[in-house]
Length: 103
Image (cartoon, rainbow, N blue to C red; front, side, top):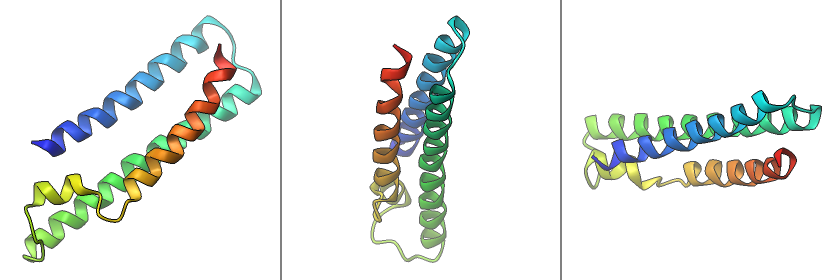
């Protein structure tokens, strides 16, 4: 169950960001810099999902081979290599820079 909560959290984060930026976009046109920043933030959000997906696949494969020390659920939520956290950190730094341009 923790894996489902984790995915829902990521989906909520991306959905909230898209709704926030969409609301701004409909109220006024975006400048070139704002579009560039938004595209970079979206690309980094996709990298979070990609990193999580790779972790999940690795956990399932290792679980099928009986190479896990714990359960598959624990493996999925552990981010053993830190790639998901790194992608989230990069997203946060890029998305934070965009906020100033939309106010």
